[in-house]
Length: 102
Image (cartoon, rainbow, N blue to C red; front, side, top):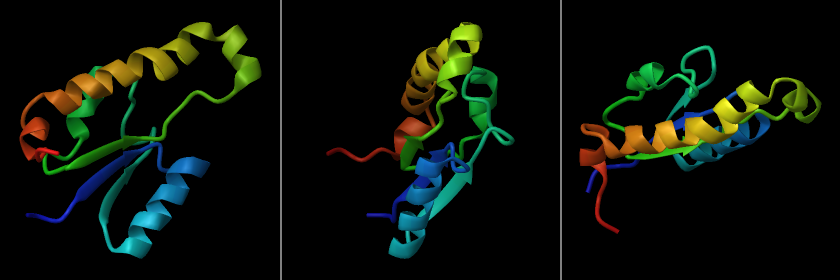
């Protein structure tokens, strides 16, 4: 069995940063990505996810609650539709081939 290879999206946020530190302490390979490298609301950028990824973790979110009312489209794109885009990407080869049965 090969070692886990984590791709963590939203690495610059508080949650993502904490997870990256935990993976680092555990000696688990983690590729941290943030909005400068990947836009989860844009499915075309999801091809940047390393196909060797065994675990895909999303810590990205639209967290500006006050602004979300003003920019509902952006909040919905990031907190709603983007999660579906990530799930679809994880189900497509070659990423899906790296999954092991539970």
